[in-house]
Length: 165
Image (cartoon, rainbow, N blue to C red; front, side, top):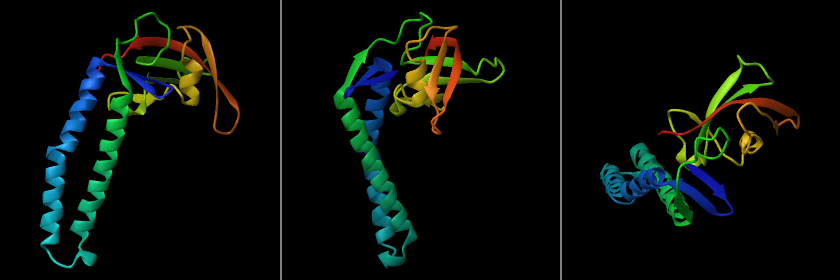
């Protein structure tokens, strides 16, 4: 679970370990794999018209960007505990909301930094309009946030539980 606050990212030990393992893989075995792909593509000849070479170089660039992102994130990380199950919305919680008081129009999401996005549940940053609107609210309370068009939307907090991974 993560919470970003003034250049500090709070992570549970589990989240920190997962991100560190990803960094170690990308910095080691993945770099070797991409270097082999680039070398194999180079051996095919003319690099100007070599789609495999250009694809491998693009993949390498994306991989190196992720290495830099993870390095910076982990340097700024503070390891802490997952949020308590108090019914108060906080980073690291899975939150269910109802839009405009309609109990059938709901959204469930993880309130966390994008670096800890999960395939299991959609992730909203605590700094996003919705994230900042619901952060600190209790189950049963209403929250407001600003839409991209400048209007204000209202949601009701239906549930807030610590993320279990």
